[in-house]
Image 1 (cartoon, rainbow, N blue to C red):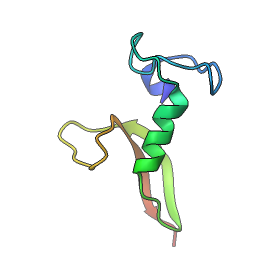
Image 2: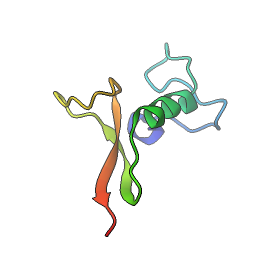
Image 3: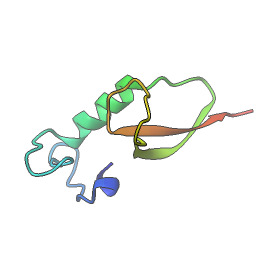
Length: 73
């Protein structure tokens, strides 16, 4: 998420500003919210995180989504 937003990772408790200077929440809290709102199936394969596509309704109400590649055979 830091790479997508162009901010420097300063460690788990020091990195803030993911959504601009007014965002004082730690990046780890944003990550926790994304992980908590995502369902994970056994054997599912992931390739990273991306911005939510415009008009995409994933039910998470979050700006990022985890990229799911499918279930491993």
